[in-house]
Image (cartoon, rainbow, N blue to C red; front, side):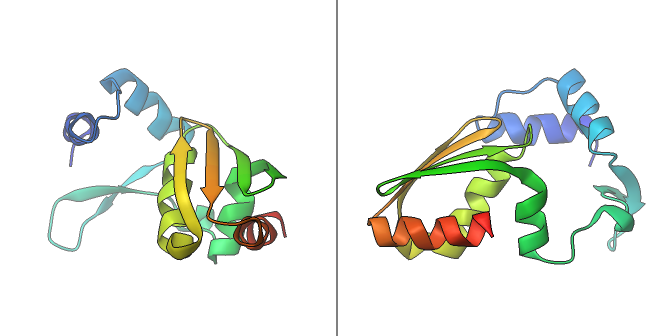
Length: 125
């Protein structure tokens, strides 16, 4: 996949990007071209940058978290909010009413205060 292919795929998902921003973000993330299993190449993080667990990954991208009733406001590193949003939805689907995100901020609305506290405890610790 080329950077242009990635831009097209992101635009198809209604994520507004340009080739220049994708190129800059890939450089900042230190992505490298690695051989793909089916031939060709893919973009990947160097193995030294891969977290060992979800907890490590959460800690690496979550910069701050606030809780108010059944709502969480989560500040992430730039570009991480949408990825974190998807991971939160997959892990806590039955506890979450909805999640809104932009580039570096998430507003999570849980079904209950108890659910919000459980999610908060997982992310904050």
